[in-house]
Image: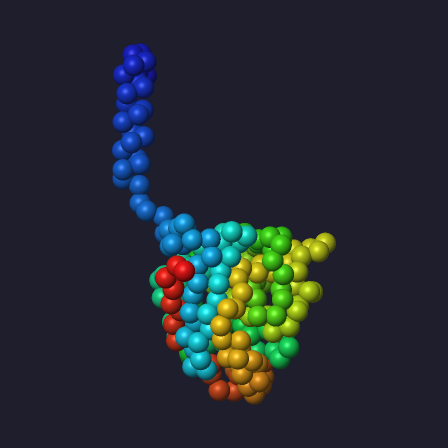
Length: 203
């Protein structure tokens, strides 16, 4: 134990600055356009492009999480595996061979942020556990009030479509069927591929 308080203080300060200097930069998505509360991304799909404005102001955890996957090019060549007309278009979780993509840890549910599951808003998919969202997302193809929080947790909206409404409308009309191999309903008969997601320059 150090008996000299001045020396102890000096060592503590030295260690603090050493930790700061040697600290690794954040890699949770918050470092991407860190000062931009409304980053935009372009989803390039086999049916056309969709531009989405994300709302980091109201859904910071969710937006940062989404941008982290984008930054690591983890959405490239994934499929929209679930399409339910007048409900949702869901994707982001599986590659073109229907193999599940690796995920980061689940994130906190921000469904109480005031954003609603309205037509063309983008929302995180999750399991029954409200805090189980990782990488899958969906576009609302209706005003899905039942997905908003009430007595229970809802589904976190984190942005809205700015361009490409017609692309989503076309997606919603494709033929779907039950896939016996995976036991999934509402799978597009012809694959719709998310080729890449591009982070756009700030406005």
